[in-house]
Length: 473
Image (tube, rainbow, N blue to C red):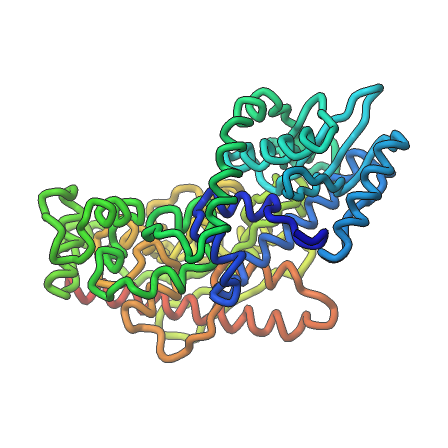
């Protein structure tokens, strides 16, 4: 094994924990990998940025990060030299044991003992993060250095920005040594399984299932799922993904195989819709949701979630609405997009205050991100005139075969045949990423595109409302 390519790394080990077939393909058939989504790339970028920011908790460290896989040997040598010289803080410390290479975010010495710290750009510690830390400890100890503790540094969900960013309050450091030690036997077993999978002459025979999406979406889905038929149980998008996986694992691979009585009542309705290829809707519930007795005003919103709080009083990952549009369904939409760098909340409040002052009902399509923004800022005061069309589909009051009831506005409009032929729309999450990445060079063009798409969003909201109303009229 060359110095530039260890048998396993932290990322490939975690990949193997999720699915040994994915690990094998990553090593032996990388050309089958799907292209990473824009959302996934944005998450990677965020992780790197937060990791670098966390270094300010322990400033002045020696950076041992390799710039390229060919520099792994140099990184290992620089790390060993820095430890021997008792450098108090080392960034991206490189360790190798049993041909497994890891890069630790921060290695810190207090007195005569060393502490290992791994940084995560999230609000909470997941089981995957603990397994990640356990592998780090396994390799570091195996290489000859036994950390006194291993800790996970993550974002503080209770932190609120007050004036300038307070790094010490922004992050929470949690000692996970006890949990990591309890996982050491598991790590050894999993390493053995991973090594065995990598030596196979062909990929392990592992059927598709929940592991294809959890804890991370696999980038070999296009390859592994190509044999799944269009009439398979997985095409029933109205059922939770875990339910579809459970049915598949129990031998119900096609829609025709599924015993209706094995499903809860609401899911039986979804199954029947697929078998008959007809839309399902609950007339009584739609009447209660949509029968206002007046002509509603339609609004739409785009929101972003920044890992770092940007405005006074805001928390990490707090949702913030930055663009909005409105129409009565007959006139051209009116819209605004907040000036980048300014807190949009005053403008949003004024925008909604004017709309609600008419006394008319207000219809919007609120994604989870938008609803979080409402709840966190208190912009919407639970007014009975506010109707969220997304809930119609999430609650399965309407369902058409093939739609994703938990999809966004553009996905829903496309499933209903209401959005025309445009296919290059980006998700609301990426709308927020695009807004946050505005620069002086791309400012005018980006704001123009956002304005056009928020106006299209409100037009689609009105079309979805009218489509549903025609069902009950």
